[in-house]
Amino acid sequence: MTLALDRLPEHIKRLRAAPDVSDRAILEDVAEALADVCEVLLAQQHAPLINVSPLVIPHLRMNDATGQVWWKERELTRVPAQEFLTLKLFVNTPGQVFSFEQIWQAYGGTAISDSYKIVNDLKYRFKEADPYFNHLRNKWNVGYYWATR
Image 1 (cartoon, rainbow, N blue to C red):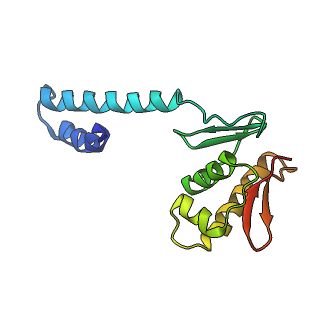
Image 2 (tube, rainbow, N blue to C red):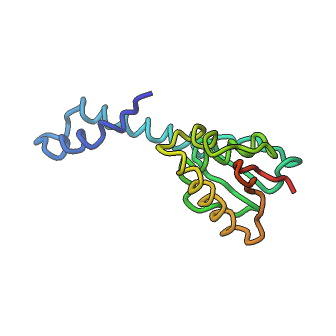
């Protein structure tokens, strides 16, 4: 879906330059663009949270539309899309070990070595919210997994 938001700056420039503000076509396009923006913002605000079973992974909430993550009711700071996708991989199959290559494929990275950085950055964000966090674990020479205990 292409939003009219992409056209908004152009229309604002034309409105400022127009000698007569009654240019209905420009005003209608701007109104349409603002309506699209409001629709997207409302959809994101009311987007459903990813169903992470509280029995399997207690204290974790994720919003798929906005990329927000909460751990023990504290929002994790600035979770980039790559980390969010990696986290989804882990929480959808807790206990399963993922190799660096599988993690890399999950978020579409540029190098397999980025997997290490993505997981460590994710661990850091969880530890900011909870210093005792220890659910993202390393399986030596194999990969990472989400531990339920």
